[in-house]
Amino acid sequence: MISTRTILADESGATAVEFALTAPIFIALLFGIIECGLALWTQFGLQYGTEAAARCATVDTATCSSASATASYAASNALGLTVPASTFTATTPSCGNLVQASYVYTFLTSYFGTPRVTLTAQSCFPSSSS
Image: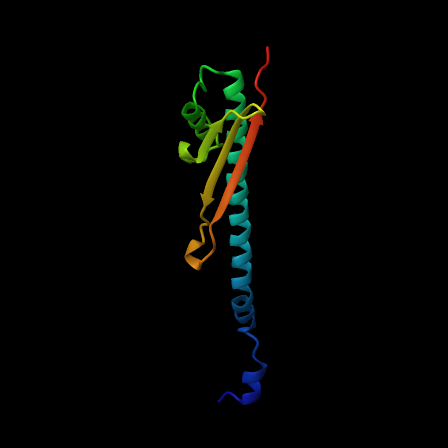
């Protein structure tokens, strides 16, 4: 027969209990790091696409001949992102050729109620003056 003293001194399940207490925090931290990394990658991709398209509108007028062509060029140069060309807008204000992007980023953990974030980027490349 097992005595009460033996049961109270038994520590064989302590590791499992400690893991059960710390695992949710560790997993939440891991997913948070992944989510932040993906959001930053998306932001950098949008910024690179706007910079490339603004430069293209000034330097390579054959490829970026219109606002829609410039937006398509920006979408194709967004560092591997699959964003629609409607994410980008191209205008010609006083600073030169301005390309702007606005993208609603949905987190992978949206099932848990994480909010959506609107990522924006813009770049203005000076017009060539002859």
